[in-house]
Amino acid sequence: MITVNLYYRGTNGNARAFAEEMESSGIAEAIRTEAGNLRYEYFQPIDDPETVLLIDSWSDQAAIDAHHASPMMKQLAELREKYDLHMTVERYVSDEYKADEKYLRK
Image (tube, rainbow, N blue to C red; front, side, top):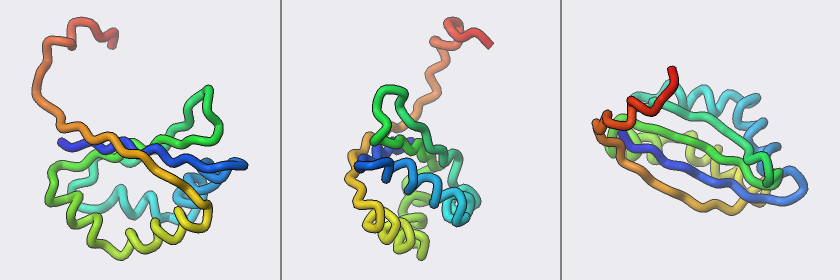
């Protein structure tokens, strides 16, 4: 699994407005139904109202490449421009390491 954390930063509440429009327009749900998408969720840091974090997980690089080639990317780009957002990205590849499980309260 590949997880991409995208930090959307704006001003005057634009990052949150972007995430809300992604949800209300159905674009986020359409992405969630794409082949290989495992997670697509927005979060907002408690101490930073001008940032929204998207956690976006995919089964593999081929699924990400297909997503990037989809017509939804044009819609995403238009919304980013509409809300004048700037982004930073972190990318993680998951492993099957389970030793930390003993520290989790379930």
